[in-house]
Length: 117
Image 1 (cartoon, rainbow, N blue to C red):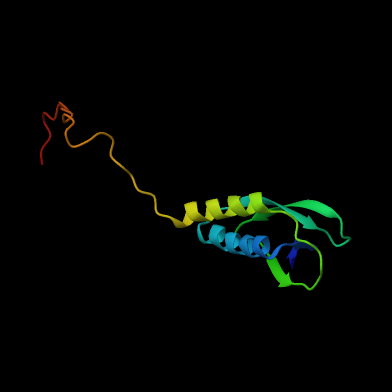
Image 2 (cartoon, rainbow, N blue to C red; image 1 turned 60 degrees about the vertical axis):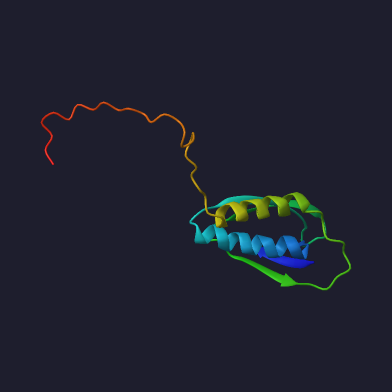
């Protein structure tokens, strides 16, 4: 479990979710983007909460280790979401032409009368 310090609040979440939140904030900042992530956590009083984090280039977030015997809250959905979004941001997108080389070429008849090179 790790402490996440965010917006003057301390939350306890699992190591993987904490590490991914930090990494995702950096990826978003590098791409000039923002996103929100919902994480299951324990607040400073030990209550179970759902924390919504706004992650962007201005995010101030810290993850610090802790030593306790609490079982980490389930953040499997948030972890899958973050991984999917980071992969999409970090993977190049390729454009594929429609049709195939055997398709008939499009004949465009443009009136270029009076046009000089």
